[in-house]
Image (cartoon, rainbow, N blue to C red; front, side, top):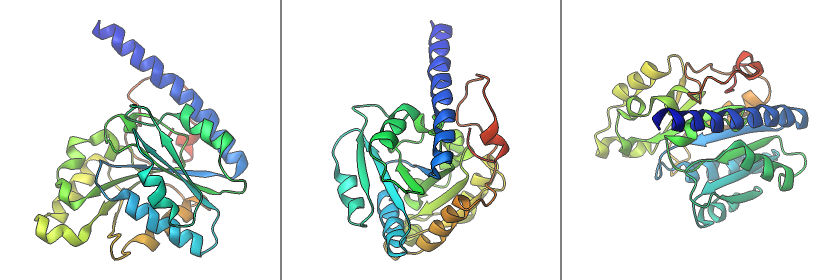
Length: 247
């Protein structure tokens, strides 16, 4: 039974991989760069994303956002305050997004001319880490209240990130957070990855994060994470890998 379940899992991931590869090619033709945001629930990624979107709108950048949750449209309402086009994606119980879901919304909703599409994945550092969405940039976020050992507990998520963002840094002192230990743990699972520090409440890190995303959109080299976002061994095109993207 275990072997059978493993085969089913591999087949599901292989199908997603194929769809993501096709979606990546389609998005490239349209000039759309997808930023996949992964974190635990409560990391503050919605608030930080809202600040980044607002800053992008102020600068007249063609940006949009999809936000995924099991239920409610609360996050979409929050993000819409930025003035950017926002769409809620309800997963009906699914704990992660898949390439097929993203493709459907890209085809039916994405505003013409959009060059940056932020995708706020379901709050979960396990399943989403294994699913390629055809993204150009994968960002993993973590709040100081979650503990320094989080990268070691979730190595696939942190090890597949192009960029890691530490949030709620204003609470580091009260939380007794050891920033040096956290940085060392991030480097253990993803050597060379850049670590950004942010506080949405004070806008710290907002401009830096937006600049990093824009640099990738404009062709800057992307960090190559050591871990593939999926554990399966299905053979496929490695175009994205050669470009330093998740594939």
